[in-house]
Image (cartoon, helix red, strand yellow):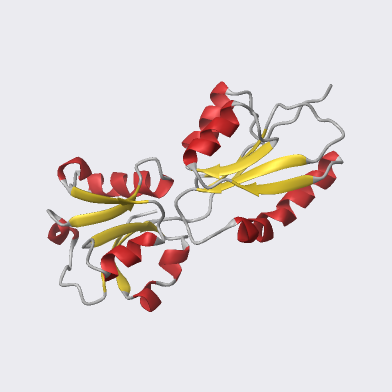
Length: 211
């Protein structure tokens, strides 16, 4: 019997097809957008069902999109091969699925992406040196952009293990923390919804990583 599994990476967003048997049933494409936030099941279906339909036509089966918000659910689903396909970030999740759980690589895409260190528009901070000892707001350590921003700050001489870091579930919470004085500076991905609406939400970019 044929078995299908697939992976595609979109700057940490990875697509995987599992080794489950292809039978006369609809297939499931799990989608996780990591800590980007600002989305829900309906939006994810609207965004990815077109891709799922293309994949389905290529293999002669219906493919349904399912939104996976929690990293634990993503990890467990890949480990136990509950997904016929998966598209997910952080990229270490699909990488482990390839290495440990029988998934096969299909395709990859690499759009431009940066770590943006942001502050309130009226903030007095002018350089990264100014944020030492301040409250830095980031999603949990497993998030792709958190790793990206952690590496960028490290390269700029700022070790987050020595700094005050406030953790949030999703990037969408970073502007809220800054606006309400729960944090002083935050990190977001350039491709996130947060980055696209900084002026509206009252923040500005203090520092941008090099591509």
